[in-house]
Length: 268
Image (cartoon, rainbow, N blue to C red):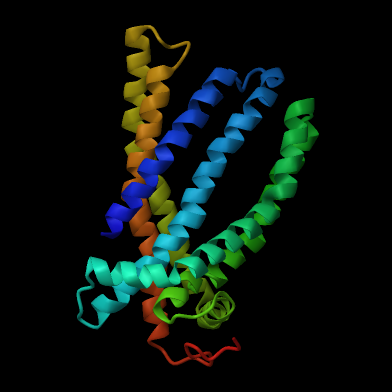
């Protein structure tokens, strides 16, 4: 059931991803010609926005849904589709509010770097581009801290029925004494996910390049673009369920240990 929800979300994302990809190809921006970089900013922004929404908002929401199933399995019960969807429906407004809030916080952290990158691309200033890279690296520190400390927020919303505010406090309480353990597990899973996605996407990119050469469409890159989008969707559909279930499993393990912030114990 969870795999089906992830699959449906990526099938829906395939259309805007294809649109952004074709737009980016039509912009004909090349790395060797800085004067063409500006034309690729808009399509690249759309592409990154779709991926961002899928991996932050959608993945966070579905990760909360998965937490209910993980908890039920731990107590020896097999959750039904109706039961899971009922819990998800009750928690959906809070899940969407939380993932949207998290997305805005992450976007705000990287906005200065993106703005500097845009200025560097349009003006061809290498110093501005270098500054953008530096700001990106600096922003990774608070963003990483935020993602780890709030990793259990979505599961707390669904499993414990907490408000967003209390779920954030619950997650912070649970990760306070296991920050590096949580960070380590999530970091390893991210690296494995990247390796798996890259490996699964490579055959699609290779076949697309061969097809463009075979059919004489190398200039337009139609086949390569189509197969690249398909590869992205397929790889994400395989990797994302595993990656987003990890916080649910970690939360189930952490929540079984008594803490100073029991479920529902916060100020509402």
